[in-house]
Image 1 (cartoon, rainbow, N blue to C red):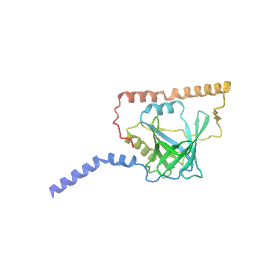
Image 2: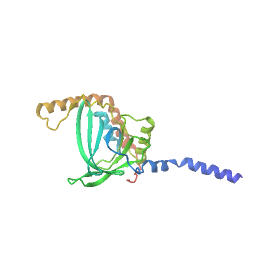
Image 3: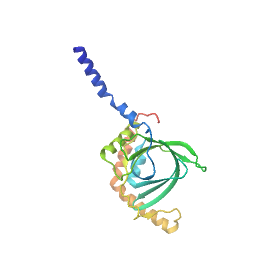
Image 4: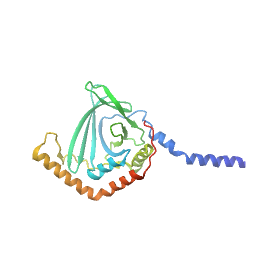
Length: 233
């Protein structure tokens, strides 16, 4: 009986002390079947391997953004329009994609999938998607049908970033009033373009006055932290 009690205690201690790998195995697993992408998605949070890019993005422009997806007549082909807003300025960017189950591919001129796909990862949030983007700078993005998510849902996303050994996620701005902002158009030039850039620059400096300590903290973390590499998915 005494030996049985010892065995139970040992097994209990082992099970309590080893949950992290099991959690990470689940959180970093591609979703078995991705949702219908059609409709509007709100950008909620972003993480990358280094905190520098996300911290600069947050400390300078603190953007909000949406992704509007429409399906084409051809199966698996979609058009995505990203709308971003920063300091009262807005811009749009459209890009077609090929979506199959849990992978999103860029497409070539013939609308055929090409390159390494972005992967949809597991999430407990019923109206969210988590995308691990494989690009020049790999990133982890949380999008939702809602402009904001719960603290529990955001905490799970933070755990996913932690499982990758990546930086703490930065939240996007929740200002989604895109009807009252100045549109940044590629065709603007001359004095109008100069005024846009000057106005944006001054607003970025104003935000930086209140957030510069985050950049300093990030740089300190980069210098002193030692991250354990995690195999790519």
